[in-house]
Image 1 (cartoon, rainbow, N blue to C red):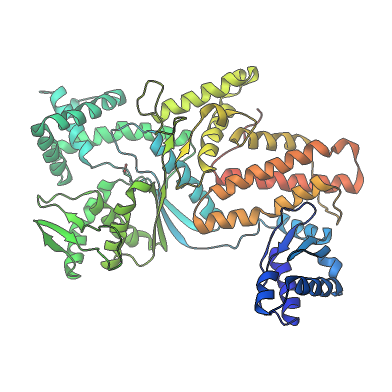
Image 2 (image 1 turned 45 degrees about the vertical axis):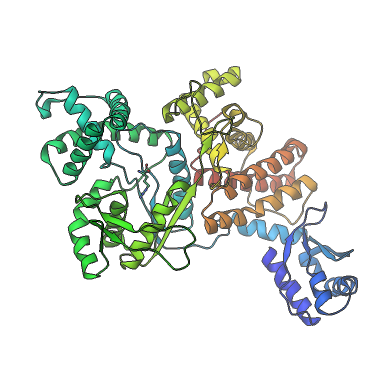
Length: 560
Ligand code: ARG
């Protein structure tokens, strides 16, 4: 709608000798939909006053022959604004178009995009940090698919780092003398062993060296270590899959860093042909410094002097593999902002070596904090395991109301998901945010349950409606209609910046408008065309809510 109004006004402005495309913005003034603030600029350029220009333009706009198709009222307002109220016709025309558009007004895109948003490390329990990658990544995946792209999601497990050497060391100590094939352990064992050996490494240099040695030999394919490694992966991945399933987070590929290792020989040969690897204190590196760098940019380490590969090299080899397998237009990594330097280095190395010509993007996010604004901790002060967080949210929600106690388990899971996801996704993802479990579990406020409740409440009233007249009945009705039309903008903003919070915030605003409408317009008091119109608007409202919730990975319970 803004585009169409801008076009009309541009024609009038140009005809009067003002060669600009006027900027039309949403107005906060009651009864006014849009405004144009360009009159000051024009007055300055034309050495006259905004009043003179404004009054003239007001008159010219009001004189166009099809004025009422577009406008209800256009007035000049001192000191220099054009206030625009659009016609009911125009609003209804756009609502009908939106209603017929599966894509809610956005333009389709058909790119191939790889998304990398898992990154849990095998043998360590999932913690709150992993939650953000998963939630944000899945939302972006859903959004890019909605736009029409072919996406390929990869969990990119951390399955071959030092933690593997540490856990294998621990197992060899604990199960001394047993045949490797017969050794058995469960998740609890892993959850204890990793932190135990990890802190032992900090105290005892010998243990640390041994763990590094095991890691390196494992990377080189040592068959004995591989037997234990496979078992560790099995136990750990089963649990990782369980939690992702609970969160409706899924991946097309369950590759790990280790899967990149089979490409190293090929990649090394390729890099040598490119003449890009240098020796630096024994290590093989790629120089990635650029002239305008404001921060220190150490060389990208491809291979350590002892022959071992690192986190960074496995990311480079993975890009090599993704290019070979999928030739994507873009690869998007969703990972903690603190990894920004790592990704800058990897991306530069990939570009410099001409491994990948498409777009490479790191979407970085901040930390989840507790009420004290420090990284989220359990009541007793430990790092929050994801399982414990989910449990605590569930308990909090259940304790809020008597009815919640007898809730269907499937519905309860969906609500808990909505609490956690909506709390996260409403924030600009680069910022840290405070997760106040109590606040985000309430049905009132800017919360997941509030949006779910809005949908369910409206849904109870709904029956089909196929026609929309050109009438708008009252202010709340108009507010809701105007808010519905903003959906395209919210989607486009999220797509352009790869930030889901535009959608989440819009969903909240839409829900507020919908509840306002619901409370002032009573369906049982009306009939005929008016009723048909209301049902049409409410059907569209709920379709928008549901579509956007699903993009955010939030699903509707049957009742709450
Ligand atoms: N496993 C990594 C970590 O826990 C995150 C992986 C992110 N993805 C990537 N391709 N590097 O820090």
